[in-house]
Length: 287
Image (cartoon, rainbow, N blue to C red; front, side, top):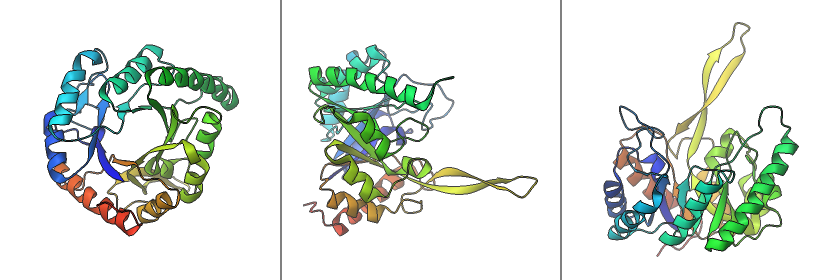
């Protein structure tokens, strides 16, 4: 098992700084955030994020991405894309970039129903999108990743398995994100991982807790999810790592921690120490 950081969670660092600090802390890899920038007066996770490579004209940046990553001695377990299979030109661009960079995998965003569309109609259309994507991933020799994500057609492992069933797992895989499933799509992790089987291709970890957001006039309590440090949320990560071991998963675990209780450098260092301990306790030999 190896550990990486997705740079959507390192907004304060420019690419060279992110790679250097993470390598010094002992991380094995970096999962680059690739999307066209959104301006902000200060760096945040989703706007003004400095650890981002632009999607438009991505081809011109491939040499820099490779150089920054390799100079730090890091690997790229996947590229963190923000496009869907319906964005055909951009999907092709991401797959080609993964092939050129030897990243091997690309995360694709999920979709939801559109106005006036039933879930079954949307699901059938999305399956057709993934059939197209499978062919393009095969062409480039890389794998397209379907992420379990709340507020999408495939929030759960069950829905994801149904979507990709019959597609070639060499070119289509599922990215299990336990933090997202806390919000929607929760299934017992051991069951979810077993269900995904050969389609389990990548893992993200973060954590979430529900906080009281308000009380209505009739006394009804309203709760909302908030990102919290890895040790503090609803997901039991110790049990999750044990489930990964039982499932035979021995590949990458990428962290995208959106909590802000600790300064960024302290947060990434503490996360690596914590996850390394969990992996060893689950029986992984980390060398």
